[in-house]
Length: 422
Image (cartoon, rainbow, N blue to C red):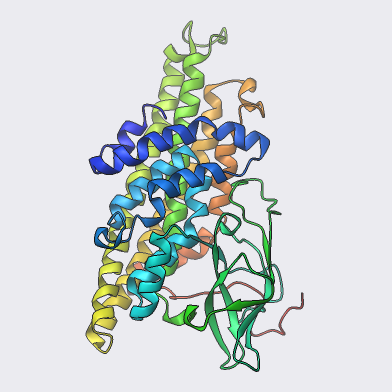
């Protein structure tokens, strides 16, 4: 990687730098080629798996790296700077790890810790292209006469699942009319994973379709959505924020490199070389400052995630303690507020940054072979998840009346209307 990574790695522990920096340098070398030729980063993900990134949050005594959220956040930003697709690919898996860490069910915790330490990862498959309402998935979980649980439905935005052994999905359990999460093994009959994501950004996240047709689900791998860790939506947004921060740094460095290498100048410019032009220097400096501010904001929001995690652990150890339950609820709500504030700032800042940097160059910067446009496309795509305008309202309500945001929300046809049909 390039010089700016010295800053990204400067506050990481030495053993983490030694473990990941050479891997990220190798990954970054092929980022443009993968983008131009649409090559999914399976080999690059394998390098990160071998280095232990999927184990980052597990305690060291259990085979993990034992990173807290601020440290892990900095590492994820560095990964995103190398290839912005990679942290998003692991988004569902990182959420699963957090569930393993906080769930009261000791058997679930042990089983999934062993699987994760053994090298298995999970993708995500919550959203549906049609058929769902804001309160109910159209995917259904039913039991055969012999008690075997089977899942049937169609999912989209299945980020990371094409690379994974498992997918973390949501279904409607018919037996008790409950929305549940289910961990589904992908290499079994009744599961089809398709690479049909057609978004203009984050093209290599494997975010396509999964079709379940009676696939088997183990009862112990099913949990009501409402019983998952309370800061899950904040965590999901934080991972996208880390991607935005990485995109910002990578964009500044790519454009700065192009300026350094540029020999052609305009006659009405200010210097014989672009890198010596005071206006171009000011533009690069302004956007580098913006990238720094985005990173600082994102890392600051990680503190609230860490507090929410610790409050959830305290509640896990005493689930009947109402005081701890309320502390966990408020900590989760505050983490949502902090990530929403970071989202509000970073969404605008990174989109502006990745567009304004083109002013430092000329029309040749728009060459598809250079793929400099990927930074804006990736930032715009990441920012389209969990739209920021709804988050700004949450922040305003909190500022004005100390109201915490809705802990869980859904997307689909409004639940008060007739369900959509697929």
